Length: 256
Image (tube, rainbow, N blue to C red; front, top):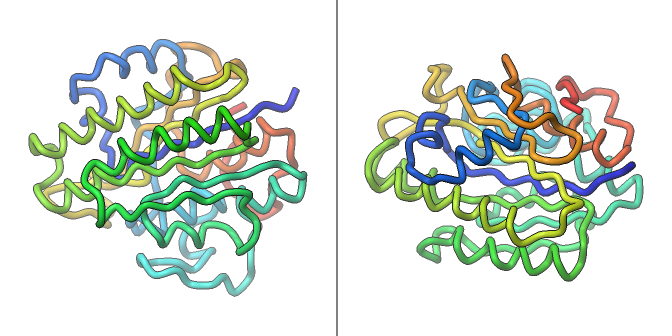
């Protein structure tokens, strides 16, 4: 039976920050999810290229976006939203970085709520309740919730600094709030786009390339640790959960 999916991404969330930030919900996620703390993102490990790979399940060399400026695809590939909309699914974005509007083609979203992460402190705590309200009122088939604060704090203060770890804790709290306040028929996928080191990211180092990846829902075995995973696995998994055929070009593996 087709399910509904909420995709939550905490920008720049390193797996070791997730497990040491002190939020007790991390252990609950590990108990109820199929997950890995050793998934890999793509090179370059930069926010927009990673997101385009997440939504289109190919490497940046294929989709063409290699910096934080979107590059229109020379040979276009349908992403998650296009595949779902071709199957008449209702899709929404709740984002705090404007460049993420380019993750799907114009006119494909049923709703897009945008708050600039540069204009609000603790923007995660503002956008999350708005996403929860929309989920409960509109029941979208797919919703993408983007949490920016960990990346912004990492660049300002450094990865794994006290300021960064506080925002890592707060991002987990946002995931907890979503989990506790939405209908039971939703599967939650939680991950990061990349990690980070010092005050930057973008290299092929393990600190930049390793990300957490959690699948929480009735189709996933509780407490199962995956030996590996890729950011490119998300799109085919979402398509499978919503009973849609993946795009032919997608390279990732469905985890359903």
